[in-house]
Image (cartoon, rainbow, N blue to C red; front, side, top):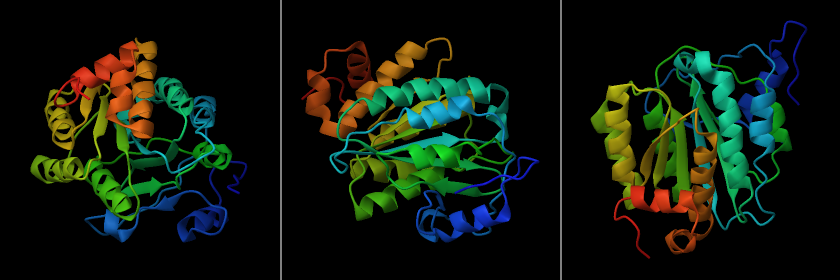
Length: 269
């Protein structure tokens, strides 16, 4: 179990358990196969009240039968998101709660921050342990690692099918062509990336939209003023990840219609 000293810093023993992937731990650093560059540094951020984050994870109540759908949820936890992090976590909680109501989903949480730090959980249906570990996640300064996330999705899919990836972030600070190539490979492997962009960075928007298109997914604005719409969209993504495009086409909800119309090819069965 992760523990904290009186200053709120994760104690070394707990970090060692996570790094070694000991029995009972959930998070692990992404493997070398997921990482193009060396020198990954794992930084223990200070703990803080994270009721929203805990609720976000606790809301991910996937069905008791894992394997009928696997969804990767990836978060940018770099410092540029710090000003709105708590609010964003609250909205992410609402989005993920919608996904958790759909049967047949196993969910893996991935996040990156700091100087090359990235972690991936196991695929889980019972999120209680995941919630305990996530209470220590804070933002840390560093560049985006979206390419690493996409590569991780591909290597994970090579072992067992990944139905879809959801990414929430606000920036794009990597070579566009390299990341776009990975997005294209995701598309060839049937792993659509559904990308939610916070903010209005034009450069990031162009790159993220292209990655979503190449993967066969879709791009959306992470609109803090419209949490209901975001929840509806993730609910539709959960339908897609659990049962495929035919089931999504049969869903008459506003979120399903918007998702289908935003994916390459538009509404079709």
